[in-house]
Length: 322
Image (tube, rainbow, N blue to C red; front, top):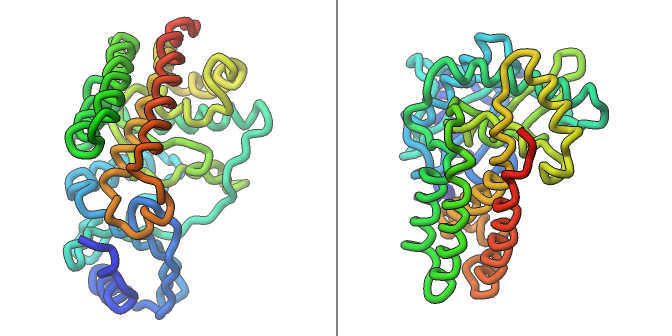
């Protein structure tokens, strides 16, 4: 199903019918690799965001897992952006086979972490989010685990994407990585996570505090997943930043420091996840524009070399102090 079927002539009436709002003709397409996101404006001046989900990525139940998580966070007075209820009381509309949701527009400047106090603030934000996350499970989302999510990604790539000698080479490195990573994840708790908690997904609203946005990649997994993407460097070179983050985090919630050993594994797992994600978008014209060399022999050679290099860091990751 092509996003090309979404046009202003179809989007605006669909949103009006689902929400009961009367809209102006303004429609602004916002950057998004995965979904299609538009800023709209109601006649009363209200600005809203319409998010049309990529078909085949998440089903309705998985999207509802995301919405429940953001609402649980909002109920705990964490600054997030839950979806706007539609006329039928749900948070998900449907148009021409596309599922969509509406959100109020919230502005802020991208987070800058320049001082010790910034790390404390971010640690506190993530801890409070995890307190909300541990309230229930996300039954229809992936679990970030080498033996689960990563193994599924590797199987998908090797069965449906990579061919020839590159497939065998890639699978060999990826399976060694999974084998090395499994013991590091043993015994760690699994809770609902933001899943893509990097600085670009945290807005600073100055007097109102930090706003956590874009829960599209929410998942079950170990809490460290929402920490490592914030770091400026590899774990062994960011010990000061980790300690400051954990100081802020542990004001609200205990952090299992065994999870720090998983950081380099999580980096490798994200590399694999990204390739699996890309492979499902090769028919999208925007994807081909951004990744013109996708699938070439040189492309896979580089990916195999990069993963092999990362495997070395994973094998050394047990040396991080608990």
